[in-house]
Every structure is written in structure tokens, then in C-alpha cells.
Length: 215
Image (cartoon, rainbow, N blue to C red; front, side, top):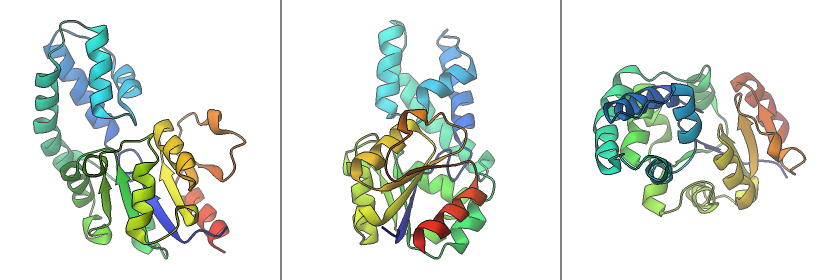
């Protein structure tokens, strides 16, 4: 089935924000005397609901003050992203040149999504076509976020291509019945053999995939 619309994850797909977030979280945890490498923080944090990440920390570290951690992260991450976040290589040109309807579907709060998109000059391109998990009360890997994004586009979810860099995001897309492109260097081997699942290392490969699937 030919694709008719594109649904993008935001963090780690359109913008290179996850490393910045992991560094900030490492710093905040160190302030509570919990010391983890940035790579470990990123592995735990990437693609999962923030509340789930906090819950897992609380189970492992009895002394962690999760409300304080959440408050500090939210208040300090937005200025950090506004000033330092960069596009994933080729993302801005790809989105601006897209010939299909586009939408963002992210586990993050709307304010964070808009901050990221504004920082790289894409907020005006997406306009109101932004779906936050906090507004639909469904976080990846739940398929509801993806089906809602398809509704925003006015398309059947089967005709949408989700582009996502995380395992939970890919699982959400597959469960929703969308076509899915696993983006970047994440290990997506768990989805090998899944119908309508593809891997793309960068936006050059994504362009080639979109051209193939939309023709």
C-alpha cells in the first residue's frame, strides 16, 4: 500500500536532543549522589515515558527524590534545548521539501516539542500538526499516539509512514498498523521480518524509502 503521509518522532529523529537530555539527567542524578555514565542514562531514558524512567530509578535507588528530579529536569531542559539543540543531519531540508502531509507524534510535552522544533526552524512547517502523548494520555509503545497522529493528518494509519529512532516508538507504529522506518543506529533486530518495517540510517536513505513507498 502506497504511503500518503509521514509521522515523525521528535527527539533523536528530527532533533539531536537526547544526548543533551541524558547529560542533564546525569548531572541532576549526581546532585542526588547517584552516579551513572551518560550512556547508561541515555539507554534507560531513550524512547520511554518519563514517568516510567523515574519509576525505574525509584525502584533501584531508594534515596532518589523523583519529584525534585522531574521538576529540575523540566525547568532546566527547556532553556538548554532552546540554546543548544541541533537538527539531526538533513532533517530540516527533508521536512521542508516533503511532498506528503507531515505530523509530529512525541512522548514529550507540547512545550518541549515546540521548543525543539522552533530551535531548528521547523515549528512553522508543522504548525498545529503536533501530537503530544501528554494530551492524548497515551505514550509509546501504545499505538494510540500513532493512530491519533494519522487522524490529525486525515489519513488511514496504514497509509502513514512513522519515522522513529526508538524501540518503543517502532513498536507503537507496528502495533498501530502503520508502516514504520526505524531511524538511526538503534538496534532494531527485534523487528526483523515484520511486515512494513524498514531501517534507514539517515535522511538520505529515508528519502529513498519514501520515494519507493509513495510511488
